[in-house]
Image (tube, helix red, strand yellow):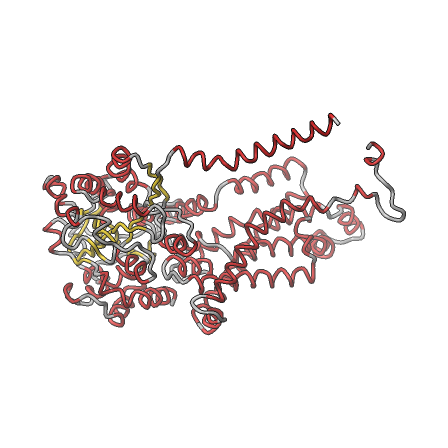
Length: 350
Length: 286
């Protein structure tokens, strides 16, 4: 008898412990009542975002921010399909924004979510809130071209005048803009892309592209170690190389500007706080500090008040740089994104 | 109570307690069901239900020269890696198995050491070694030759994959070779066989199970390689795992990606079946 009672109480204990263990996440949730999950690029991007956006947001609202990296477009799609949300907010480039809006992955914007007073004309693209711009620019090693390297994509394509191994990003939406400009298309007449012409132009350079980069640290490593002499890469990562005294030259002429836009994952239960965070993150002074740290160009025009001319000069959206650049047009590229990506993949392997 | 605990003898059978109770496989079975079987079924369902119900994704795959080329290239690369690791691994395992305990253990430790470094780290190490500032390029320059282009080639990917999968091959071969009775070699010698003849006629056939097991393991593992070919292989050498990644990350085509994954899985399973038919699956682990 006494043995039975002992066994029962032991079982009871196990049950209690199990119930307790199962309830733990709930207890944790209850303590930190409000959490927002933000998808980040990691590295220097996250450092800047944490310092200037996340920590101040938590201080101002009490909402804790947890980060998930790296930015994964596929995850955004998977979350909306499964209803299990790993992150609520993410940033997308122009092409991803187009695809996300085609696949209906982002929460629709309306004035109830962010009041017009916090925005500026052209702030919203396809339900994404424009945050900061980064440029895809020509970068070359100074010692390889002591008399100056290529100043345009046509010169980047000119392997006789500028011999040497090259590298471009494995990213159709940007590379086709380079290819078309190299073939003489006016920057103003770039969109939508003439795909046949673009791929014909790419054919000419293919054998000189040693490798196609896919992650920004990889692009830095390739030019830093001298694996390639010229590269098309992000101004932000190229500027980091300059800061590390790597002998590279940045060419802002014909830069292809892509814009990172904040979007809210459609259907997330934390949408309200997500929009609150976005409104917070695009406020002029905060965005200025965030952008300054990594040489992004703030999209909120109000941000420039808080930046010195010397800092602005390094940004892709500085008036001088912007005049020489093209900005990717999400809306015009939208219909051809799918064909473009598929054709590019095949072209790479052929 | 005490009486019940005593093992009972069932006439003509082994002791009832000696047979492991079926309940012991329950945790593993449950784990595999929840984390492998159910997701796999979901993938199978996605492959036939998106974008619409039917076998369209599979039809598209087999109708596309590009996809077939990727699959064939993957199989060819896996075969090359298998042959290379067999050629490099066999002598190593042979020496480790037939030499004294100290040298044998030392060799195996070195082989096993590389297991402790992640694939990604080893890929980056190869980037440094094969790079323009690496030791090979430095040697070429010192000898007055232009630095060879090694990175971003099929050669680089094959070399790195062989290095990564070599431990699988060596350890499997070693296990098989340790089971070979040394007496048979001495018998061959005493009957007048020269070392090479003894090796070919006596040792090699006995080590065949190890060769088959090791090759199967290496072949099937290399079918799914993703990072290494992507980072240091030739840009034109797309492998099937990279293709699946692209279908999801860039094209958001979950249906096609699921179909491609299942085709890869089916290829691996088909190979396992062939292997099992001729050699028995459980031998891999022996």
